[in-house]
Image (cartoon, rainbow, N blue to C red; front, side, top):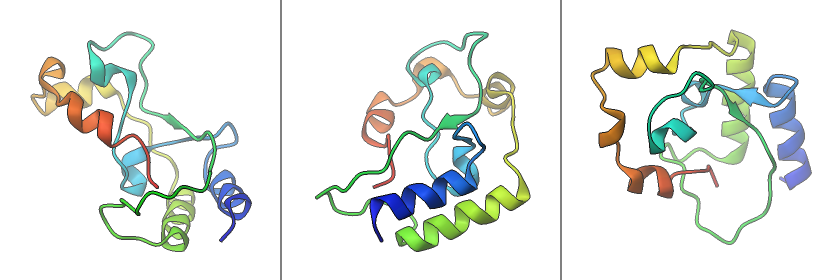
Length: 112
């Protein structure tokens, strides 16, 4: 599948401005607040930027092909991207933002 075909599939699945909710398509949630404290500007959405070829080995934790990933994104688009309050979500789970593993977030920034 070409990068332009993948881009088109993701653009069709994501909101018109490229926003989506990462956990709904089973990719790690990586936001700026993972490196520190939440601010009033923090939100739950991720923004699609681009698709490019890479020589890296696939690293999807669920071993999905790109076609399977696109199908999952399309399915979740049909369900709807469900916004949430990141502050309430993290604190309801008892997560200390200062204790999050920076290594995890530095090494899991994209689905390849």
